[in-house]
Image (cartoon, rainbow, N blue to C red):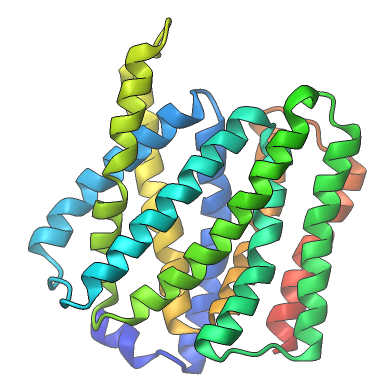
Length: 300
């Protein structure tokens, strides 16, 4: 499997597989965000998910995949710091704002800066048509955020703070997407990076969540919380693993843009599952997001 993946890097087959992986990551990332925002406190859910995928990744990291090369340890340390900052901001934003408000802003800020970072770090360049697609996609995402800001009635007292936290979170999304793409390309075996990344990344938040759980007046039952953690851990493997692999097989910027169609899936999840309001204007803006991703893909 590893040899085949390495053999298709930079080929048409690799490009097509990266496209499928990025779109799969988009849907699963929206599911992951809904899990964190849903039934339980976002900090509790994140801790349960991180603890579960840490434990699930440990046997593969320690006994299955090749051990990382010496130069990978500083890279893992950097990834851990970046992802911890991202998760702090993400949980804080979800605490202050509705899912369909926070998520579009986070995802809208990320791709633009990722494309710029990919240009300077990996030498990737978009043509005029693809930049038009980027602007259409980002315009649709931020249009959705502005619409929410103007018309959403829930949690308005903390709405501006939630939006500010969401913008900062989006910047961290761009940073970790570019950094993780560098990390997964820096090791001979991509599955080594994935297994060790998930084991290391899942260490801190379970401790923070447990301390938060102890201080709660009415802490949630651990059974349902851990069930969500196991399911979220599997989703995390498939979602983050897919986008990381896509950035190794093909262009980082294109994979990042395609992943931002997750905003469409997020709005549908918010409407169907979280019972948040979605009207015709939101549907039009979501269609704009999807159109931007299509322009980027086929414009190349």
